[in-house]
Length: 173
Image (cartoon, rainbow, N blue to C red; front, side, top):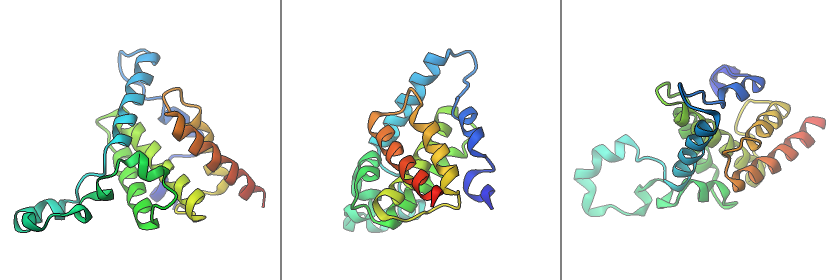
């Protein structure tokens, strides 16, 4: 069942996964690219659902913010908002999972993994809800690996640090 939520990747393999080995690039360059892409993803919104895009010609006159994912708010802002509803957090988690499954872009893959785990952290911290089948110990390990990435934005490092602390506490219970 872990394969459905982690793409078959164990926490100890997450470090290698996030190494983002880009052919011919130095580690510093790889870290810079990963950090820039993650910041860009967090500053953007979720893409429009294809059903919404297909229906746009018929509803263009009625278009309002409710049809725009996250009401047009940046993804990073929504992930850090304690008032974000559980449905939205799960939608972001699914988006991260989909992005992480990309095979054509190592940086997009890494950004997807970060977004996936950031949504899980938000659900734990703000909703006291575990939206994954990962164990608390496994999540604590994954959050630890993520928060120590040199390209991780400071606000996400803090988010992962708080989630790691909560997971360690729950794992001991």
